[in-house]
Image (cartoon, rainbow, N blue to C red; front, top):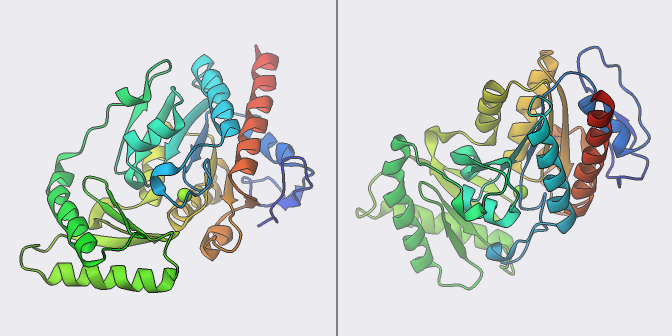
Amino acid sequence: MSPPGGAGEAAGALTGLGPGDAPRPARTLGDLLVPLVEGRGPLLVVSDFDGTLARIDPDPTGAVIDPLARRALRRLAGLAAADPSRLRLVVLSGRTAPDVARRVRVGGLRYLGNHGLEGGRLPRGTRAELLRVGLEPWLEPFVAPARRLGEAVARQIPEPWLFVEEKGPAVAFHYRTASSPAAARTAILAAIRAAEADPAIPPHGMVRLEGRRVVELRPADAGGKGAAMERLLEEEWPAAALVLGDDRSDAEAFRVVAAARDLGRLRGLNVAVEAAGETPAEVGAAADLAVAGPHEAARLLSTLADRLAVAVARDR
Ligand SMILES: [Mg+2]
């Protein structure tokens, strides 16, 4: 993986862009995007939200998209609308799809929430509140247990640092503001075990997924962002993929794209969006490149929009 670098900085060598593409020195992030922009499409851009398009906010309800990221996504959405065979855009978040759509507010994107369990396409010019998201029938039995587990853990931990995010068939316990994150995590796991021992909460068939200062319970068969990425590759048939993320579940998506690249199915670039002292090691290990925070990720998307606009004008 290359060291973090700004869009205008030297970014080091990029490896593994595609079969037959020998690793070569690259000067800027813009240069690294050339293999994604040139050549056969579509290019599938998949971005996480928290920690990737938005700085992590101590209050999960307060996360706000970087304004440059929104402008870049709007420009990209315009390019995708003009030529869908060139570009497809997806936001893939752990939040619910309606929640993340309201925070991004860009039409012309697919919004996949709950790590890919749900989602929908928001047409251009449509208010984010009108995103249509259906729950697959097999997920409905998880909604009540997830809510009950959320309530039970909240009862056991009446602390201001605990934020319980109810997400339909999943529930997330955030502990970002705890003075001791390790102790907070231990307390949450103990509270989940205690709730599971309560006969009022029958066996729920959910498994634990952990991220940056969050413990989540979700249906065992749901898969995560890796499974979501596999579905995206089947549905969108991209010739190239750019994936941005900051957490363990994003690393699953990185690995799916890297495997497809190794098989010669696509050209791919996985970008880890780093946070000082907090990025899980596996995220960097699975990425091709790291950028230093959401604003640098926004600059990368902005550079991508610049390059694509040039390519579209040239090919017209
Ligand atoms: Mg994230």
